Image 1 (cartoon, rainbow, N blue to C red):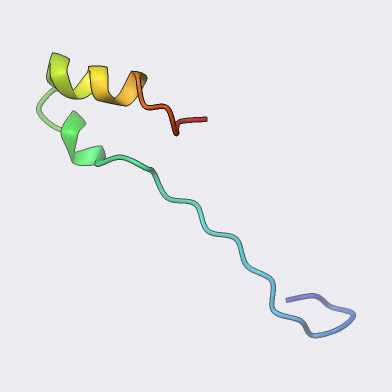
Image 2 (image 1 turned 135 degrees about the vertical axis):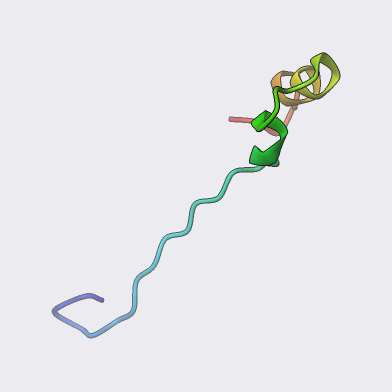
Length: 41
C-alpha cells in the first residue's frame, strides 16, 4: 500500500514452467523445451 495515497500496489512473480519437472530429474526433452523457449527472458 502506498503510504501517501492509500493506493494498493502489488507485484506477482510465478515461474513460466512447471517446477515439478525437476522433482525426479528433468528429461532431456523437457530441458530442451525450457532452454529453447523463445518467450524466456
